[in-house]
Structure formats: C-alpha cells, structure tokens
Length: 306
Length: 306
Image 1 (cartoon, chains in turn green, blue):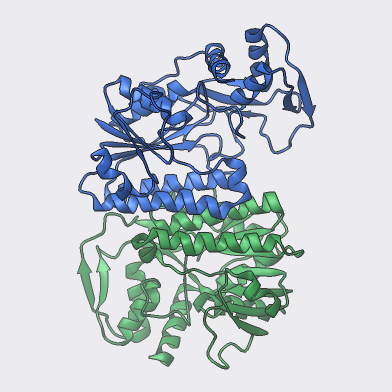
Image 2 (cartoon, rainbow over the protein chains, first blue to last red):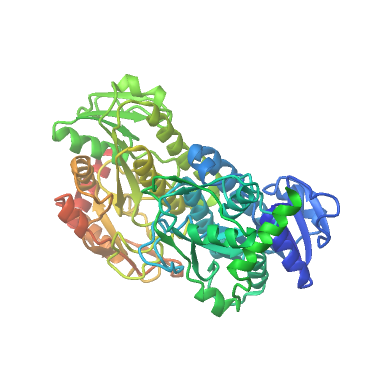
C-alpha cells in the first residue's frame, strides 16, 4: 500500500506516518513544509506542495492507494474570526481535490480527519455516538461537517471510497506548545517553565484526549476497513478533567503548579466524551496508551525542545 | 416592517413579496434582475444588485427589519456538476452577507429558504420532522445545510436573529416551465402543448408540493415568530404521486396526456413528505390551497404566457 499524507509534516501527520510505516505501508508526506532533515526516517519521500492541488504532487508520489487528509489551514478560533477564509481554503480546497481525483483512473481511499469535538455541538447525551445530531457551534465544525457530507456524496455519486475519523483531542510528542490548540502541550510547557496555567471555572470541565500514536493506528485500521460504516469516533475511551491534567503534571514534575483562575465560560459544555464502541468493533481498534503515560510522553518530548 | 427580499424578482420572490405586502409590510426586491414594468405593483421599490453585496443595496432600500434570503445561483443538477461554484457563490456569498451585517448597527431578522427535499437525504421515516437526521445526497443540499449551520452559529455568536424555512417543492403561477426544477410547471406546460410527459418508473413516487403563495404566508409568519424554534418545515401537508399530477392535469384539460416511461431511478426515494406540525403550532400557519386548485392556478397562468 502506498499512502500520501496531506499535512504529513505536522504533529498528527508524523504520528500517522510512523504508525502506517510500521505496518509496512510506503508513506509519503505532502505538505507545505518539509520535515527537518532526518527527523522522519519512516517516510519513503516528501513532496512540498499545496495538498489540495493534486497535479502538484500525485505523480511525484507515484500515485497512492490511500490518501490521509489531515490538511487544515485553520483552528476553531481562526475559523470563527474569518469563516469565509476557512470555507475557501478547507472546503473549497477539498472539493478541488475531489474534482481532480475524478480525472484519475485510480480510486484511492480517502481518510479524512474530522473533529469529534466540533461537529456534534453541545452534547445531548454522553458519551457521543456517531449518530448523535450534528449541530456544530462554530465555523470550524461547520466546515468539517460540510466536508464530511461532500465525501459521502462523492463516494455515492463517483465511487471514491472514504472513511471519516472524528477525532477527539489528540496529544503527544511533536505537538507544539505555543498554539491555540492542544491544551495538554500548552499546560505541560507552562508547567515545565514555572509559568501559571489558565483555568476557566473550577477545572471540572471534562474532555476526551487521545494519544496521537493511537490516532495513527486508527488511520491504519481505517485504511483496511471493509465494512459499511463510514464515520468513526476516535477518542481516548474516557474523559479527563482540566484538574486531572494538572494533577498528572504535578505528579510528573514532583511539584505543584500555579493556577490562574478565570470565570467559567458559559459556552463550554461540562462534559464532551466520544463513544468509541464502533471503532472497537469495526476497526478492531482501541487506544493503547494510558492517560498518565501519554502525558509523560508529551512532557518528555517537550523537555527535549525547550 | 420593511423587508428586503433577496431574489425578489424570481418565482418564489414574487409570491413572498405579494404575501408580505398584503400584511402591510413595505417590501423591496433585491435581485440581479428587475421585474417587468408594472408586473409587481406590491413592491415599494426594487434594487438591481448582487444580493450578497450588502453595501450595494442596504442604503438604497433604507435598511431592513427583515431580510428574506431566496437568492441561489444553482439548482440540484448544476450544484452536483460544479460543487466548487455552488459553494463559492451560495455559501461564501451568504457568509459575506453575514460579515457585512455585523458592521451594521441594525440586527435585521434573516429568513432563509432552505430545502426540505435536499437537506434530510433519504428518509428514515415519513413524514420528515425537523429533527430527522440531515444527510444530504447532493452538493445542493450540503450547501443549504452548511448555510443553515452558519446562520444558527451567527445568531449564537453575533446576535443576528434567523429563521430557516425548509421548503418542499413550491409550485404556482410565475414558475417557469423550461427549468430543471418545478415538475408541476414542466408537466403542465408539456400537457398544454400536447407533448409527452417523461415518467421514471411507474409514477408512484410521492413528493410534497406546496403552493407558492402558501410559502409566502409562511415567510410572513416566520418574520413575526417569537418562539425558540429556528427551523420549520413548510410543505403541502400531504404527498402526491407523479400519477396524481398527471391525473389532475388530465381532469383540468379534459383529455388524456401522453406519457413517455423510463426505467425507475434507484436513487429516487419512493416517498418524501414533510411533517409540518411545528409550523402549524409555532407559526400558526397551514397551507390553504388544495392541490387541485393550485395545479389549476399553475395551468391558468401558463395559458397566459404560452
């Protein structure tokens, strides 16, 4: 199997590439950026290109049986600031990719990284199953959801096979601590440097975190899946509160961490956890990393780059 | 109340304008086209403009309390042919309109014409309620649904009030018989001219038709609605088969109509009818025109233009 990872030089792209290469897949990265020399030894090759411009990378990769679509130019905050830009780059970009794929004789399988935290909206029940209503609360989730619909339609109308992975909050080594996403990396970095951690409310808000290498294994499983389901939640299997994260960090560092407490934000749902039963049954996948060990891996990596 | 109808010179726009003017609303049409002189006496005025470019019409209209958004550059077939174009004009256009409205001090209510035939996808149960899963089967429905989500998000985040009307298949006078939409107008026109009518399968496929003046009254009711609901199905209250339409035409014309029968299309759901209970209860709205009378109105109008 030859796999092209769109966004292969990023945090998640590196984990997916490493996981798939470990299973014998020939993995190529397609990304606006190149990996640092020697930093991604599992790759068969890299192409520096606009992921959504198929012609700029398809032949260089030698074609692909599987495309892992991790490419995104936005995070929730930037998508809300400029929804037009979010739609233009991510939705229209993906549609252009689909149009170009119609011209190919090959019908690669497309695996799309959607967002289990963004497409459902405020949970009506937890854990969230894949058939929970989809009512995104922001432009980021609306675009992810629109891409999901277009992929399903493209498979029905033009035979492009797809699988959609609704990820919870991935974390692990290579996650940059200076972004607006990735609360574990941000907290860990601040704790490592003796800086206070910002907490909204009492820290009881529960979220779903999934170790990024487990996400990588889920993409490998989805690449080989033969059943009828198209959408899979990929989460850690249990929720962890903001206080849990801080306690884990305090245990790892052997000292207490200063908190800066702000008023609770009314738009934060108190609990958001994915039901991963379908992935367990259909993909024969389950997260392997424990939360404590995964946080330790993040901290260990952050120590090497700080 | 001053109302700007985006797409006010079109088939549905004329019905909505007439219905709202009859209730004392000052109605303006904003459209790429102007109405034929004297043909829309209920209008306070018309602006020939790009509906999505707020600056090009807002001051000319004198601002609006209500915006009826009927503007669409596509029908299902053209949206499927070119989804990128569909997204660029309709979704991005609507997002640009929303961004421009954020700059206004006024917070007009935006009423959006969505599609009850396109956003739900294959019915899991009929009649379709507003909480039925939304799984559009084509690009047209995917874009309508994406606009719905962005309107809901815009109200939550920026306080722009909205109501979404999921219309079934509107029909009535002013519906052009040469388009790819509007099966009743197309059939009636062909029957009037002694041309055969194309039928896929045995003609038992049931669809929901709503008389366009009833749709106009539904927009008027939505303009005044004060409850919590945001999405309303607007349909005829009952289904009618393709054979029903042909029988009605044969009764009206007093002669039989030739059919040209093609194989059934597997992607056509056998029944697609909207549940309009919510609109009855919350909008105090119900369709008033019977199917037989409505078809007669269509035929009568087509006689005047043929």
